[in-house]
Image (cartoon, rainbow, N blue to C red; front, side):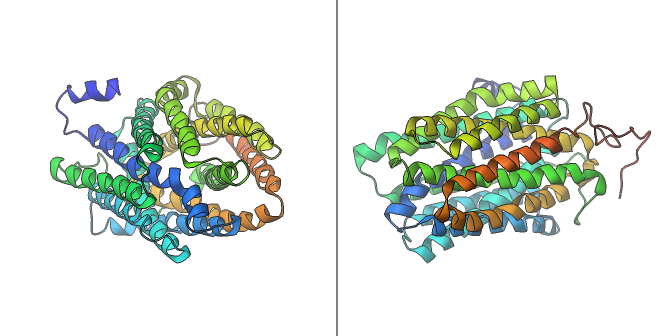
Length: 405
């Protein structure tokens, strides 16, 4: 936060990086509120089992699968405006959640929230990779994660402190989190000028064979993420009986680590490169998921949950790998395509693995360990110095590669 505040003093605050930071603050205020209450709300108010929570998460990921349509919206709306509209929709969906405590109601508000969240994330990733210089991108992306972690920490902290003392109902907590996000989106719309991208973006879908490794890593990352997002948290409530305050405390710890680690991880990626950073992540995840499968101690489960979340910051390396190999005009269309690829598995896994959960929850986490193993193998193909024409480790660099149209 010190670096965020100091940046406000340097050259004015109406700058692209400040807008990115403001949006990074707005998102967790809604999404972290929705996420921290998700499993308890689902079990206590809507009487979900593993099958229903899996279906909910599959529905939540459908807008992510359709993120490739983002590029068509850019035919009629600027990326920056679309990001802010999506941000407001995220807030609206969150605000409505508590007022519809039925299976269909929960599904519908989740889809509204998810449309805003996934289209915002697609636009934000595209804008960040366009606006941030390549040499500093890992560090600046780490700072954005840290700022978002601070906002999540604030949201989780308020829920943790007020839930027991004030006896708040779910609907008012959801309403507060969503309303603040909408307010920030409206402020950003009014306060910031329209920033132009350094390179005009193509307004059609882009699929290039030389990006195949990025696509593969993105696909596996989406599959791995679902194991954590859907089933690790659900296990904490269903198997170990964690309350709202206990789950929120775990989220507080996660975001505290994010605030501290994310900027440092960005610096480590600059120093050691994307391949080594992702190798460390996937080796760690194999161990975490394998232990999840057989854990019986609630304290150990909580420790695994925090470690698992800490690895997410290393996904910066995947984004900066693409930034280094990409034709600059491909960033926006590829952001949409990559989000869709990321969510192919995300649409299928929650519902399918929800049924597996009913048979044997350990199988879900062992499958997660297998996914991390596949990602580890793919990661070894990233070169030490990725650039256009040198996308793979054992590939002979091509001289004077021209951007493709």
